[in-house]
Image 1 (cartoon, helix red, strand yellow):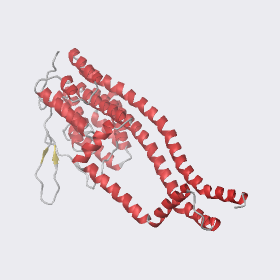
Image 2 (cartoon, rainbow, N blue to C red):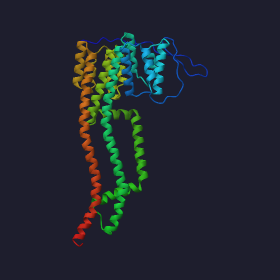
Image 3 (tube, rainbow, N blue to C red):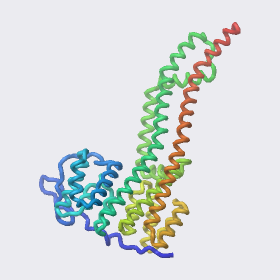
Image 4 (tube, helix red, strand yellow):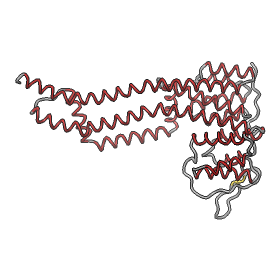
Length: 397
């Protein structure tokens, strides 16, 4: 089997940014490898200045302008003038300033890691080094658009049951805390000490417990939420939750397909853009979004560094399906690994689309039935004493 030729990750990488000494009374001043300082705007920034969807739109617009023959600095000036978000407008303007001062576009991007991740920056660096920035921008536009699309589909599949559950919880809470006690007062007057039916007594008991211990219930819910958040932030909790995402019934298959699509598209796009394979594996690992996928990619990186192929160590991780590793092996043997990776990503994106559609069509009726059952049980429980009373009156009891 033909082996991939491995270039050192640092061989094609541009010089990293250097930092000037901090002047008295002033903040640090970023200086690019070219020696040109970048003018930074004052102000405090909270969070990312742009979301994934906005980044996809920006990349597509920039790729279109560059493809039309407009210089990169001029393209950034045009996009900066039409940008409505002040934080991202400042980012675009600073990227244009870095080019105007003699730096590269990638230098300006690397100064804003909250807006542009390592994958984005390294692809632009590779495009600048190879003189194919226009092609790389088009690939980035396709990559970001597909990433936003698949992420949106997965979020949509998860948001619907969450909303239904939230609404159902509010309805059940209102019924148990405010409606059931009113019926309980009526039952006490009508039945005159007679025992309630078992289902009614059960529902009334739960309503009493909720009403008299509402603060404890709210405190308990708060403790559970905070404990889950802390667990998720811990190293052990992250590993457990990421493992569950890949192995939980029904949803696990969906998340695994989405992770495979993300891995293959990221890796293939980086290789096609001229990023060395070891550096591409590191970037793909850091942007995988799942600690177990990242560990598998780390194994591949170490084996490739020793001269091995990609497919064999990837197969040994027992995470990726045999079809994926077989197609990657074929791509390595034919010298068309980037194209094969993108083809795998397209295939899995389509499978994720189908899985999300099927899951949504199943979840919708299931959630409606569950909510109807919950409300129906309460309604039946409230009417059972009335039925018993009517029976006793009709029989003269």
